[in-house]
Length: 504
Image 1 (cartoon, rainbow, N blue to C red):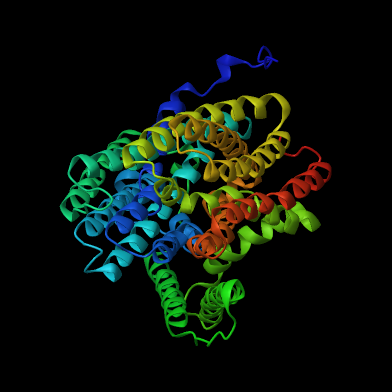
Image 2 (image 1 turned 30 degrees about the horizontal axis):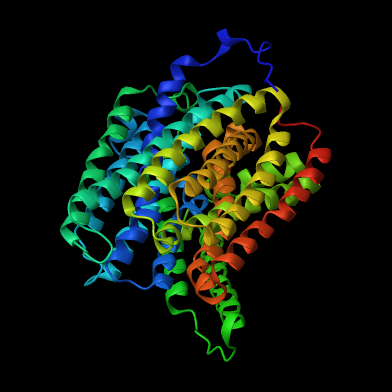
């Protein structure tokens, strides 16, 4: 059955923005695999235990907590850069140089001798890359209207996935060609690979220097004086220090349970530890504002007003909306963290993993994202969200079949094609839906909150994916990830009736 696109006014397409979003998407997609699957293979080749490898996925929790410093990006002008480049481009350039510096740091560390230093570099990369995403998301929303977000989301995702091809397949090609392989580890090969990735990030830097500042951001007036911005930033740093100290010195407990229940208890305590640290950090910020450490109006405008605006617009449905945001991608994120290790355990070579899961797989994702964009324009975002949720759950069952099938290229290609087509379709619709939830008055902060909520629980749970596999095996793990998607389907059906097609 063909999709009817005759109703689309092609003359209204934002052609001048498509190239921008492709290149910015590339810059955004490049760093993430250098923390996730590519780094996982590096650590495995270096002899790091499987459970420790997946714990490294927590280094990307900066993506999940970026709402904490999104108001800083939204409100704080940068010395020199904001004056020369503007509000968005100044922060974008700073974050991109921070990404490059973090990748170079990781390249300088051999995980055999400096696992802690590698973790520091990975955390810094997650933080700087998340900051880049805050700016790019705000830029994407500000340069175009709501009706064009599905198309621009597809272009952004296409660029993002190309960046992932370079950081995924490209890194694996380089590392193997330079002499590192399973059973034949070479630190120099991985060092050179990460240095090349840092150089490729210059594409993002050049894009930032060439694009124009969005009209919405260019007309933004900074209503506070320099002293007030400094005090505001100082209170932010105090809150971050509180979070780090509480997390570092949170009391540990002795778990007397055994087996799988011990893992569940450990996960629960770790989650409590993280949320306690975040809660106390927010408390410090609130008390500091009360005591006048920062301009109270600025704090309210930055942190309270965006949340109030969202709850005022959605009322009683706000919590249901946040639940859908937080759980929509849980199936594919939890499964994806262990994916490369799974392929390697099945006996696929690094080149086969690169060719099929990175190159072919990402092409399927890009195709899926454009299909999702067209379908969203034709039948509505919520219907495509529902289709994506169903596909995310059911395609994970194919990995159970793959775990018991002969490790042929055809079998892997079949599973990757189905999984990535469905994933691309779902993400395109999801990004467009998230964009429609934001208010133009709080673009960066609200979208950062939504995208943080989107990945927080999946990444917390994903950090234990290696432990779960070691405890129950791949079959039961993939069944578990598929079941995680069932409540999401019912949640979409519920909200589809209640939101009255507000996404269109």
